[in-house]
Amino acid sequence: MNTTYLHTMLDGLDDFAEEQLQRWKGVGLAVAVIHKDEVIWQKGYGYRDLESKLEVTPHTLFAIGSSTKAFTASTAALLVDQNILEWDTPVRSYLKDFKMFDPVATERLTIRDMLCHRSGLPRHEMVWYNSPRSRAELVSALQYLEPNEDFRNKWQYQNLMYMAAGYLVGQLKGTSWENVVQESLFNPLGMNSSVFSVDEMQLQPDFAFPYMEKDGQNIRIPFRKIDAAGPAGSINSNLVDMIAWVQFHLNQGQQAGKQLISKEQLAVMHSPQMVCDSLFHSKELPVSTYGLGWMIDSYRGHAMIHHGGAIDGFASQVAFLPEEQIGVVVLCNTNGSVVPYTTTFNIMDRLLGLEPLDWSGKLTKLMNGESTESETTASASENPGALEATEATETAAAGDNTEEPQVHPHDRPVTAYTGIYTHPGYGELTIEQTNEGLQTIFNAIEMPMEYTGKDTFAVELVLFGLKLTFTFKTDEQDSINALSIPLLLEPGTKPIEFIKSPIV
Image (cartoon, rainbow, N blue to C red; front, side, top):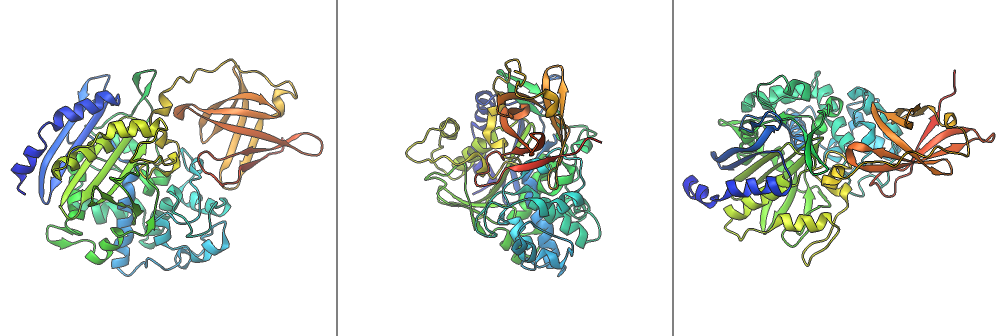
């Protein structure tokens, strides 16, 4: 197939992209399509800055979220090629102080286990999300986080493990994960615009602002800085750079005739390591597996390697069909948007000469909890593209978050609940009294609390439109001495118990 012929197969893609933005209330979109070494599509749609009506271009930087994970896996592959690291040597052989809650995992966990999500740990997202702690401190906190599955028993998406894998890569090279990615991947691939922090992104001339839908309107939201957990999802990039990244994988690790990663190690990354869950399980996507930093699926009978990403106000999808040498990159600046998926699948349908499926209709049914003849719904926590447990709820945060006035508890004074509570893995949580009632502050996130009786509160995560249940515990003198919080979307996990610090 030549480039001209493939370009004609994409006739109508402009209209489709615009329609998807409108249907899903998106703000901006960037779309690239690659065939072998040729770029056959590279366009922006909508706005990178809605308020100033600045349009998306191929140079517009977006947060790519968990599409970062393939970069982290690639740095590990580089170290394997350099005989600095082995996929199946325990991490503890490299980091002497490394420790997990499970002693078996402590002794046996490898970087392969980390990169294919089989550590036994559930997400434990609030450990890292907006945390002020350093990467080293977060790695040290792993020993206090309880698993909910046996080691290597089940695939469970785990951002902290990717953070730790990147930390290990940096330690083995005597530098940081960021420096390894910059020197080993960004520089040789000519990814000259890509940066590792949203702070850095905002210093560039062309970047997208993050948005979310609320009450039918798109509102700008703050950038989410996740530098400490960077190897799990902090890269910010654009179409120009991501095209080079996808071509690198289509070319089996070669760049300009030079083999940056051996074909052998790239094949390990691109090979199934664990069977996993998928939000899109259907007859078109019957089996999902996870390699190292990539999902490996069969899409309508064609091998597909891909990974999505999502972080506050941004969503991405990076995918390629290795046998057909076709690659797709879709970047979006709307919170929890499914447009990167619907657009990617539509492009693949067109280039494969297949009747395009109505993925928007399918996903609407899935998100409404409906099933069709060919689909089954997956748990929100199983979305491989999400960087956080709540992102897969898609536009759940867009609902009405208006609260009824808080009812103050009558069974004990409000001040009985206030104070500082600590957990060795999660860190410090503060409960304080405000004019509107009690609120929780955790990792600098303020969460209003509503009393529901019996020392229990509903606590709202406003950004995600979700509520947690806080249950306070008492000592023998009936004084509040602890706080128990069940984890969202993580079945089989024990509640996290914070101990109240004594008043000094």
